[in-house]
Amino acid sequence: MLSKNYPSPLRLIITIAVTIVLAESLVMIFLWVFPQSSPLIEGLIDSTLLVGLISPALYLYVFRPFVRRDIERQCVEDRLNYLAYYDDLTGLPNSTLFHDRLSQALSLAKRDGHQIAVLFFNLDRLKLINDSLGRHIGDLLLRAVGERLTHHLRESDSVVHWGKEAPSETVARFGGDEFIVLLPRIEKAEDAAIIARRILDMMSQPLPAENQDLLISSSIGVSVYPADGDSPEALVRNAGAAMYRIKEEGGNNFRFYSADINAKTLERLTMATHLHQALEQSQFRLYYQPQVDLKTGQITGVEALIRWQHPERGMVSPAQFIPLAEETGLIVPIGKWVLQTAFAQNKAWQNAGLPLITMAVNLSARQFQEKGLVETVEQAIVETGIDPCFVELELTESIMQNTEKTIEILNKFRAMGVKVSIDDFGTGYSSLSYLKRFPINKLKIDQSFVRESSSNPDDAAIVRAIITLAHTLKLEVIAEGVETEAQCEFLRAQDCDEIQGYLFSKPLPAGEATILLGKKKSLFLGFGLSKQKGH
Image (tube, rainbow, N blue to C red; front, top):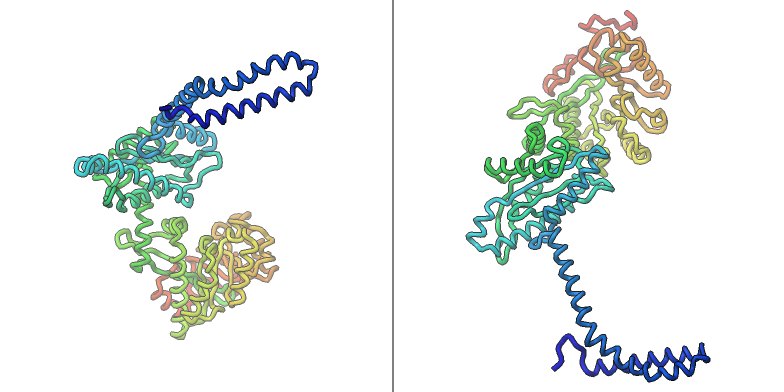
């Protein structure tokens, strides 16, 4: 009986026949091209037939085993090469390949000046699962962890932005119950913290292992280049040290190696969590700062300014939480609440018979990117019953860069009857072309120019130029941050239309603002100012 390594007799006969036909064909072609060689060739025909009969047999029965042996040897070499760089159980890169990719990422980071992060994490209580359910269950669990991690990081591009040349994110198994993640390009340490938190949340979900779902937690240590090391060994070692520190504290959490980064990042994450709760628990407050007409001295409007009344920290400054709200996207629901609350307050003042004034509300760049912004503003107007002519939206100059989209949105606001002002004018994207093209109503001179306008010739010249430009374009002008009589007198002399600042009133809660409006307080009473300019 022939071995499976050798062909069947039928295949052998067919192979020999085909070989003979090919050999004879070659001979006939040669005779046609070189007829003078026919005596020699005719003498070799028998030899050709013999070779045709023998060569297939030689290949099939002599050389094929050697070829097969070479193929098998190559397969073994490929397998050994795979095991040198990948973990056999999970299929993830092993420590050797991880160090290679980390070295590449470090080279690019040192060249381009960006940060990278290493997340070293350990599965809590895997040994207990191995001992109680068997090692095969633990192996299934490790595979599930590897698959979930890989899938998770592919979905993280919205948080971490990789450079074109940087290696992609790498998930590796270091052996046992330890995994490690490379984030080859981060903008700030908080990016790594967000990924770590998402991994922890992901690991808190049941993991399938055979016919059961298992719950398991993990501890993550984070190191960041360049703060925590500038070599692969240092970053891995320090991430591991941070991981073991968090395990000592009870596990199921993450920690940065750098105490300073750890404290700042945890503070921001804690504040982000509290921001979510603040909106749900009605911890935000609106304060209202009056805007005063410089010709009549009367209040013509107020600006709604948000404050956060934290139950433990007290009043939190907008400078502390607004940037974080922008980053997390919470500014969108917070902004919607501000619109509703501010418009409702102005309507309540009108219903109480108080002076008719404009309510100014700030819109952030993040809000302006939302597709439903116009609808959100319109909904707030309809639900509160406020007349759009008493609504003013303050925009920053950074919004003006997407010209066509901005014009489209501003035209919709104008069609609704809503006024638009440019806040902090002169500090951002100050292009004179948008003043001509965009449907805006007012410019707001930034307080950095107003502060020394009465004493600094350069600031005075800038303020004077802005007022002249605005009036030439038939725009109103308001100066913010007015704190002294000298500043006020200078602005009046330049025909500025309105002012806003502590000279007249600080931002007030709704109750105090109601009292102020009821008193009909005038700028020219109690401030030593005359209704006549220059007096």
